[in-house]
Amino acid sequence: MSTSSPIFREEAIKQYKKRKDKTTLPRFMPFPVTFLLWVLLGLLLLVGVLAWGEEIPIYQTAPGVILDQQTQGTTTQQGTVAALFLMGSQSTQIHVGQLALVHLGNSKEEFASKIIKVESSAISPNLIRQRYGVVAQVVSQPSIVALISLKTLPASTYAGSFVVANVQTGSQRILSMLPGVGSIVGA
Image (cartoon, rainbow, N blue to C red; front, side, top):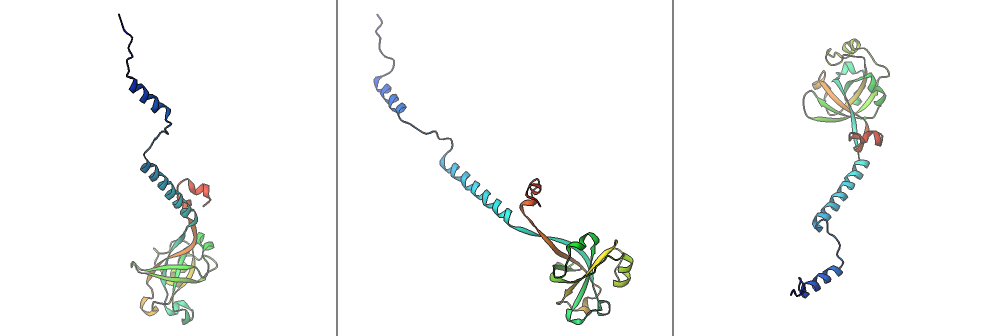
């Protein structure tokens, strides 16, 4: 009574077998996404190499005062001279010839200068006040005095003006500034 007829058509079975015989590779992500991820990986490696090789300068900040001709006790060949007051711990990093970027008072204008003389020992705040006429707020601890030359400023106009100088004391790799990486790289 029951005739045994196949459930599927013959044509459908043939197409199914054809597809099964074909080898296809799985595609997890579309090609544009894969390409973008490779580009991002390349950019990350490039930034890492640049951060490894590039260095940024390290500066020490020091207050100071522009000296008049009587206080200087130096020849006029050096032009205007300013005295910077560095903390005792900074003295080992400061040497004659180092670059100093000087700000006059509260102005944003910056003058490039070089250190021309560094005192060998720290002097007390009282002696600094007597010798250079500095108020108590500028120097509150024993300091090393470093003289810088400001050739572009006339001493007669700016004598007694306060300056803030950033003295370049070294450099540091950019990569060593990242938290956790600095101890590995060896800052």
